[in-house]
Amino acid sequence: MVKNLYTFAKLYGYIRYFHPSDEAYELDWERFLLYGIEKVKHITHIHDLKEQLEILFKPIAPTLQLSFSDEKIQKTELPDKTEAMKIVGWKHYGVGLQIPGYFSERVFSEDHEKILLFEEEIPPHYVVNRKINEDITVSFPLTLYHDGNRTLGSSESQLEEFDKLQLLLKEINIYDNSLSNENIRIADTVITWTIFQHFYPAFDIVQVDWDKQLINTLSSTLTDVDATDFRVSLLTMLEPLQDGHMDVRNPAHSERFFPFHLTRIANDFVVTASGLDEIQKGDILLKKNDRDIAEIIDEYENMISGSVQWKKYYSLNELLRNHTSKPAELTFDRNDEQFSVAISPRFTQEYRGDEYNRSRNFYYVDEDIFYVNLTGAVYVDQAKHYLEEMREARGIIFDMRGYPYDFNIRYLLEYIIDQPVVSHQFNVLQTIYPDQEQIRFDKIEPWELTPKEPKITGEIVFLIDSSAKSRPETILNIVDYYELGTLIGQPTAGATGTIQLMKLISGFEVMWTGMQVLVQDGSKLNIIGIEPDVFVERKMESVRDGIDDYLETAIEYLRRNN
Image (cartoon, rainbow, N blue to C red):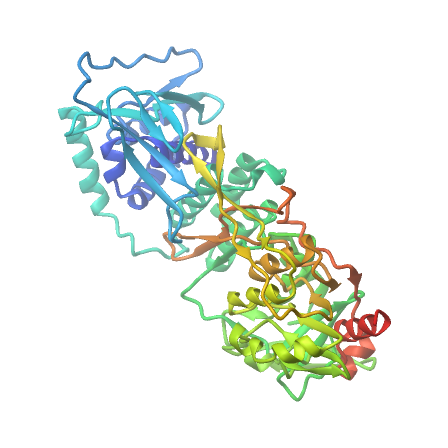
């Protein structure tokens, strides 16, 4: 069964995203997936599989050919008179799904001799050949003539078969999309794998056998029984891509959290903030429903995509995130005495408090050292109210641990630079050919910051950790590259750039990094992250006493250097 589904998945991707026929453009591909999966999955002979694939795909792509290795591919006869025709083909900027700025476009030429796809001229009926398994090869055109009515290859009998197919697809209830339905799980797997196969922008920095990932995930999908199982299967497939933006979510489930924060200190999972009287800072979480926490964390790390530091950070978030209000029995250690508490997850994270016990955003932490929190609900206009304090201070601590809601906070850097600076490079994948052949990137103009007066002249440090992902890393990249301050803490997550978002038939949503991101000198940023100049380890006694080791290290650093 898996081989049949693998073969069908490969062919689906080629025709869905690269065959330029009118029929492929008009088809309801989600319903077709469900229909086709049911038709191929129980076939037992390779010749029967080839025949069924032709029955399925020929009405959609009449110019495709399927052949065994010992069969000769037939050359398609082109019309004699083409002067009045146009050429049609696909181009993908990223890939057109749900995020503005990315698109997939079916393009028509200006004349009959060539079509311009991005900056490349492609002739009419440009054919590619691809193996869809070890026995069968597909041959199909990336460009086709269009006579103003239909694309080349359409015929009266073929269009009749296409109309019959359309009627059959209308009978499929696409809204009966429970993940207890095997075909829904298979279809979602095929959709997800296909998008990454052809349009993921970072295969150059990861080593992964993506075909093997499809085979393994199809196998696990067949044994999954519910949405929880299937989410694990998808996450496990995507994990080797090492993309910290990667996630699989079910919007139908409201996220709930246990009302406390955790950090790792040595081999312990330590509470750093709590919204419950029963749980205190410094308590060590040992078990959840009698399962060892370290064992659970290992499972999460094996399915979380991203850098090592992001896996360690986000696995704790996964542990505390739940989709049900059902209480869990949590076992803690406090001063070498164990106790258990039944705790129900809450709807919002506000009950958890702040993991660094930050209660103020702007204040003097020392006689002439001013602290500015740039994360959370802090807006640039609020921060600018304290520019005078920043200018007068001998040292300034900018806190970038977390996520700034207001990206305009980056404009504060204009008060600490001497010359214009630019952001890192944002590059969008441009795709014409399947399987990421002959890929190219569109280099988006980086945004620029220009100096403003009066300048902040005190010594500057930035607090960083692995919760700094995406937006804060874009800001911190400038700080790091142009040496605008000392970075104190732990490495950032290593995942920045505009995301992509895809909704699956089941309602699940898959999110990932939609573009290539390079440092100003062309080196990689994602997966690596931004390293601190001064590394900080949290201490158990500090957590228990409510002391922020990062902040204390920064204060001591500024005292020594002034």
